[in-house]
Amino acid sequence: LISRAFRHQFIIPDWSGFTKHIEDFYWKCKTNTEGKVASYIPQLARMNPEYWGVSVCTIDGQRFSIGDTSIPFTLQSCSKPLTYAIALDRLGPEVVHQYVGQEPSGRNFNELVLDYGKKPHNPMINAGAILICSLLKTLIKPEMGLAEKFDFTMNCFKRLAGGENLGFNNAVFLSEREAADRNYALGFYMREHKCYPEKTNLQEVMDFYFQCCAMEANCETMAVMAATLANGGICPVTEEKVLKPDSVRDVLSLMHSCGMYDYSGQFAFKVGIPAKSGVSGSLLVVIPNVMGICTWSPPLDPLGNSCRGVQFCEELVHEFNFHRY
Ligand code: DON
Image (cartoon, rainbow, N blue to C red; front, side):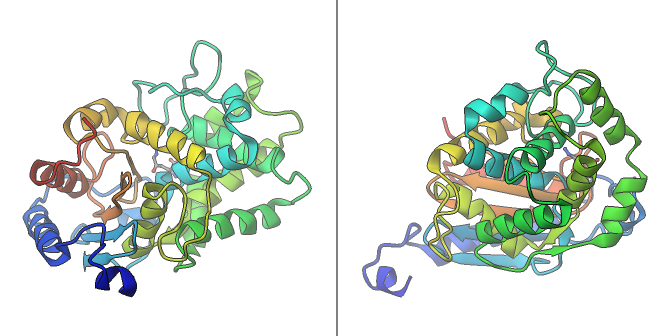
């Protein structure tokens, strides 16, 4: 970083000018009081709706944070692109996509529906993510028990995050498991349709899915993960090659078309950058070859996206030309 600074080779040369804009967007979005905090489990319902944080990490490791960026939240659906990335990287897209599609479902994220080939539509919705968990559990290092597989996955997440803070929220895990009628229904429905690889233990897969949702990180850490995706799979903090560039391309393609629930089409149209939201109010945003961003604000709009997060992205592309087209 220092040698680049001397050579004036930063990816964003006028860093303080850029971060001044980020601050402006932050304050503008702070006044947005729309949305409701998720209430299906008590641990999320208790979240303070005032929490609001934005962290940025460029592909050459320049960092900026403002607001509540060091408070941990559970990854929830932001874990979906990460588990998908691990599956792709270890198994290759041909194997992974024998089991899961690449099509937006056009429905809610937890809807009881499969595509025409009786596969989950994509890995960014619950059915697809549960299926991806079955691939991770059953096809990658199948000799590992659930505990080992949890460690393995957490370690992969940590490497994406450059080794930074990553935790696990046991209360959220236990609550998720209690309030999971729909997820169990999806799990059994997919078993009925023979969606899983042979030898899949569904109860273990469901627990593994809830565990991935209950992993915990803060905005600063998640921005590094997003930056690793922006950087073709090389973590900008450690310079470790964590994912193959082809895996990253596939993950970003599906974040672009399916990452924002049933708002994905509109988001792709208006904002035009890959993103993935989670029900705890986090939003993982990737500007390929430039930077990763994480925003966090618990109040959600009726489709399940963080209100301040979506507004922030709109402000960002209004000012800067990050829209892919
Ligand atoms: O499976 C669930 O309902 C949550 N634990 C994850 C929800 C979430 O963030 C929605 N995602 N697509």
